[in-house]
Amino acid sequence: MTISNLLSACRLPLALLFLFDSVPLRLAIVAFAALTDYLDGFLARRWGTTSKFGAFLDPLMDKFFMLFVLWVLVAEGSLSLLPLFALLSRDLFLFGFLLYLRARKSWSAVMAQSLWWGKVITVLQYSVVLLLVSAIPIPLAVYVIFLAFSLLYLGELAGAIAHSRRDRNSSMR
Image (tube, rainbow, N blue to C red):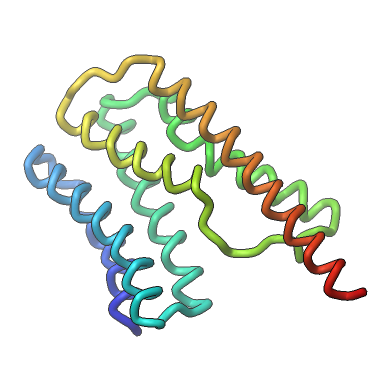
């Protein structure tokens, strides 16, 4: 277990701590989760400790943390279902795209890599959660932007897969 993997794994207990109804604590939890999300990958690359396990654990903990926190906010009435859908649209689109690839038996085209639009959406997710915890109203336009960025992410993912296939096909010749 590397330091990077420990940073990823700490988002599990951080999510559970979010159950405590304290605004300062929740703000600290979200800020610390965002920091660990940034640091885990940065340190793994810098120290040369990247691994398949880390590439699996990091996004799993990211998704768990965000889903859990958003679920708590929905359960408390701080977030309604339509904004929830917008905040999770990247992940929902990704899931649908992976199902499509699976149905086409193109599953092998999927590679674990982080994409620029995915990083932008993650930063925005953490930012919106901080605003929600602070009870600062969020304009509807922000959620529309999430949907637009999620579509851009989907396009970036499809392009990366197509590029990967072209590279693999040209190296086989």
